[in-house]
Length: 225
Ligand SMILES: C[S@@+](CC[C@H](N)C(=O)[O-])C[C@H]1O[C@@H](n2cnc3c(N)ncnc32)[C@H](O)[C@@H]1O
Image (cartoon, rainbow, N blue to C red; front, side):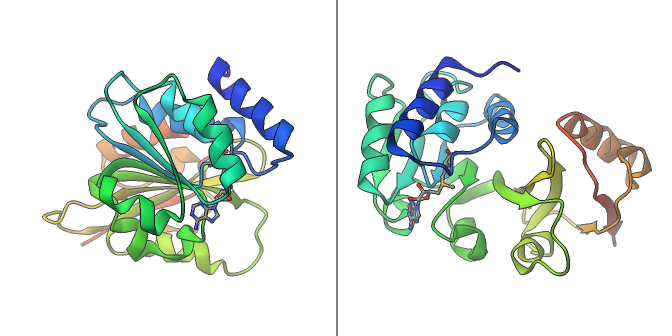
């Protein structure tokens, strides 16, 4: 997909501030696609930067859907506030995400991208609506050995998590908060199989095939009973 004009403006603001941690285009395209789905009523972001990820999200959301994004650093928060000044649905909250986001939760879609939030599933899940989607970027296919941060989410009992490639060696963890009533558990197993090798129900394979077009999905799913 092409890069939305708002994203280009957020990138220009990052360049001006010398900010180098903005999300990549592949990650942004995934955020955009997820924000475009039906049923998203409230969106959150932990770590705004200068608003690149926010811009990918905001450019997909219909009018009236609020997007709350938290940024600790005043200079970045100011840049993002200026970028979204004309959009009444985007709220840049300056401060620690643990302080400023909870009163605006729960979120149906949450981009977890700063403030060590990836290391604190319980606090992040406290911001999530039932069946919410969580997106965590900045993982790599080249990681060797154990990765406790990844494993924390891949093995968490309250979420179903898969890892998707978003270009090159970039990997994103995509989690969906489980409905309380759901029986059985989905586990991601560390098998670098192609998508055609996925096990599970036909409908599960279908859903994953759709996700697979985003990139190089290397994890297989199996259903435990
Ligand atoms: C990886 S960058 C975010 C990039 C942004 N999401 C994007 O897509 O362009 C992480 C950001 O989190 C911010 N941050 C760090 N600690 C934070 C905290 N406790 N609360 C809110 N933001 C925080 C940093 O200042 C930094 O701007």
